[in-house]
Image (cartoon, rainbow, N blue to C red):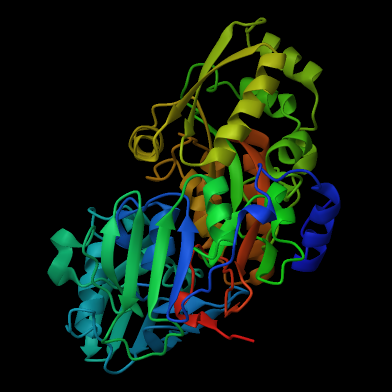
Length: 507
C-alpha cells in the first residue's frame, strides 16, 4: 500500500505512531531564541566534498552550490522547467539544437560578466574528460556564443531529455577564470557567494552584490551537524531555522506554534547496491536470493518509521513513468536459501563485505538490519563503516566493495535516472551490464512519442527488476521542520534548495 502522504496526514499519523520516541530530548530542556530576520541557519548532515558542481557527485555539494551558481534553466516544485540564467529558449523543430537567450547584465560574484562567452567556457569544461558529468552531456556537439546574450547548442544525436539536463545543479555556469580554485573558492552568478567555510563545521553564504534578483535574507549558514539529536536541540533552542528530521522526532515539534512541519514525498530512492563483478554476486541467483531474503516493509518500519514507499526497480514512485515492480521478489527466506543452494552456497559459505557511509546514520542502520536478514538465510556479512570521502573514492569511484547502502537524488526523466546502468557509464558502480538495456537507453532519448517513451521506460525498469543489480528499497518521504515565521521553504524534484525565496514574516 502506498504511503505518499500530505504534510498534514503524515504529521497526524506520526503523532499516533510516535508517542514515546524522543531521543531523550524534552521540550522543557530548551528555550526559544528569536531568529535574525537577515539570516537563515540550516543544518546539513554532511560537509560538501567541494564547491565545484562540475567536479562533484555529492548531494551535499549541490545543496550548497545551488545558491552560489545558476543553471541556464531550473525547475519548480512540480518539475516544470523555468527560466534561470536564460530568460527564454527555442528548441529546433528536429530537436537537434537549442538556443538560449540570457538575462542581460548577469555577473559573477567577482564582477566578471556571466555572458554567452562564460556559458561557452563553462560547458566546454563540463563536457571535457575532467568533469565527472561529461558523459551526461556527450550529445552536445558544439556550443557557440551568437552574441553577448545568445548561446546556441548543437547536438550530435536527438535527445528528448536535453532541456531538462540544463536544469541539474552540476550543469551550473562557473567562472572558468578561477578553474583551479573553484573547489574551495566558488565563483558563480547566483544570489549568494561564499563568505567562509570551516570544514566539518559550517559554511556561510552572503548576498552576491552583483546578483540582479531579490533575496529575502542576507545570509545563509549551513551548519554541519551529523548528530540529529544535537540538531533537534539546536532547533528547539532557536539556533537553527531549518532541519531535516526522522519520523521518531516529529512529536518534539508537533503542536508547537514555533515550528512548521513539512512531510513530503521525494523524487529519489534508496537501495543496497551490489557489485555485480564480486564473487557470488556475479551470479543472478545469489542476487535474487538476497532480494527474497529482505523484508522491505519491516526494514522501512525499523529504519524509517514506515515513512517510505517500497520499490522494485530504480525508479521513484512520484514520476509518471514509474512501473510497480514490487511483486517480483516477495519476502521468502526459504526461496532465498533454495537459490543459494542452487548457486552452490551452503549455510555460511558465502561471505560478503558491506561498506556503509559513516555520516549517513540511516544507511548504517539499514545496512545492519539487512545484514541480519541475510545472515538468517546463511550469508555472512562483514560490515565496515567508512568516512564519506572514503566511500566516494573507494566504493563509488573505486568499486571496491560487495554491498553498500546509499540513496540517489532525483532526476526528471527515465534516461537520466537509469543511464547509470549503461555498461560503460562512469556512475555504474554496480558493474552491471545488459545489452538490451543499453539499446533501450539509446531508443528512449530518440523517441519523440511520449507514450512509446513511457513503454521503453517500463521495460527498462522491468529489466532491472529481473536482473536485480541492487536491492531496491524505497522512495523516501522527507520531513523538514522550519521556523514557523520562515516562509518560502519548498522541496524540488532535484536536489536543490532555493534559499533566495526564503523570508521571515513575523506575526
